[in-house]
Image (cartoon, rainbow, N blue to C red; front, top):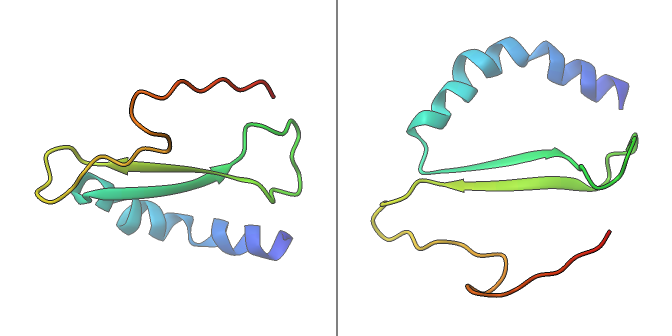
Length: 76
């Protein structure tokens, strides 16, 4: 895990200069982030995933995790 983190950190400058910059031109962005559901999660086996879609793109339909109009109740 330490070597993976070091590898990611070593490429951060390139990411900031070339990859992150492209978000503004993308029709879809998928972000994989650490979970917020498990306090002090050091294992990071449970990701938090965010899908961001640009509105008004031809042939794109909104994506819903649940049916439109669903009521979701959740207690952790």
